Length: 445
Figure 1 (spheres, one colour):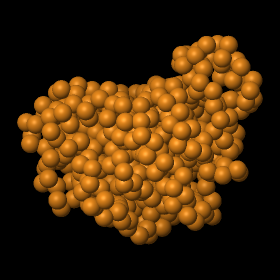
Figure 2 (cartoon, helix red, strand yellow):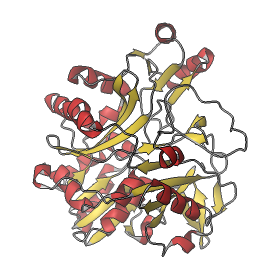
Figure 3 (cartoon, rainbow, N blue to C red):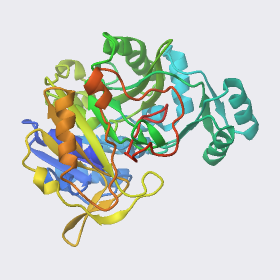
Figure 4 (cartoon, helix red, strand yellow):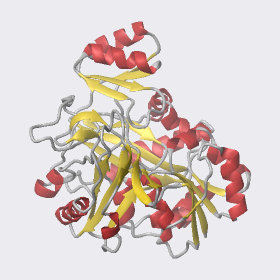
């Protein structure tokens, strides 16, 4: 099978790497890709947002399957352009991708499907914002209705901050605050059959101890030893299958990756948000533990015959991914800083350096974005996996590098979840300055 992965980030590198290790895949191509993806795929300089160009590339390569990684091309209808040329494409249509493209639309779908979620108001004027904030009280949860690269959410006790964020966004969704730990649960679906993957947890805030502003995600791990028994079955029954069925009833068949960001609150399961694609960085540890060939699952979803493909299987053990970010992130980023040490991990078994914001400049690997790379490691348990991941982190350096030191620490130590939705996080690093992140009802990455 010839495959083409669309995108430039860590999620796309993890997917391309998994496809390169799939015996059924004969060629892996990527557009536009990054230097890490270039180690496992042939790169093509094509704009991921240009549907006609992506479709033409797929035709010229004779691709059997196109995998669209990021949300923006999906919402823009790039997958539709590929399918119009008769090529299988993993990723929902433009209509179906509105499940991520508009939080108001997602709330409407959940209401119709009976999916448990936070109470919310959609607000388009300052008066509506003020009324909604009064109705729910602090902590205030204000979400940009559209795509915001994982950083369009503010959770705060400061009403002025909530009002200011709403004013910057335009239309917003303001909702009740949810307590409890957060879980990411992905599902591969063809619009009828739904195959959940195993749960993961990511860490959204920049500093250790879940302090500081939201990011796109500073690390993730799987499995979750503290998750309740029967969680996956409950989410499939109450969230995933009803949502897919409701999308079908609306004539917007959802075929691709449905990402449910969940809060396990004191009053039960609630959906925080939906995404219409693999999350980053959760994809990294999930792909590291996936024991099934990835291509068959993705193509089965794309072609509408997922029921003919065996459900995903998982390796024993655990996987942990730790993100290294550039100086200034998440408010800004530093580009052009030389990265050293990644080559020392190239031959390490069960350790992968996943590139996100990297580039090649004058023969050197350099930073090219906020989240630069992630070290993903597999171990017999979480403690072993995180030890190997942080050993890998210690081998890599670049000016201004920052990372969290507590990814999966609590779960590996005492079986409990680090990262709850209990209170707005402070905006300063904790004593010692360790780097950190969990969602706090923010957008899944």
